[in-house]
Length: 130
Image (cartoon, rainbow, N blue to C red; front, side):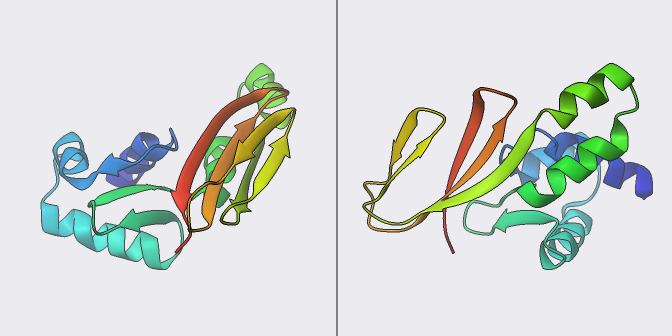
């Protein structure tokens, strides 16, 4: 089963939301078994799970740990050390400036931004705060 967990974390390593039906197919495991794994990992705060959309993604706090544990190449590790990961919450109707980039939340709810940068802004992930 640890091979399937490794495969699952490999799939989730891209910080994107993944549908459980596609993960079931990719890992070739029964849906009920994947649901048990997802429930366990979500309770341990290793992944985020949206039951409404039936999607999961790796929790941002664990992504750097996962990448660091898998990379052994010295050049890759040097580049990874220059990469920063973080989560920022922007309150409703507020503006935030990050590296000369203005980000405004025009919604009526607080939003969570998952950010990955390596000297320039590379990726922003937006999610509602629960």
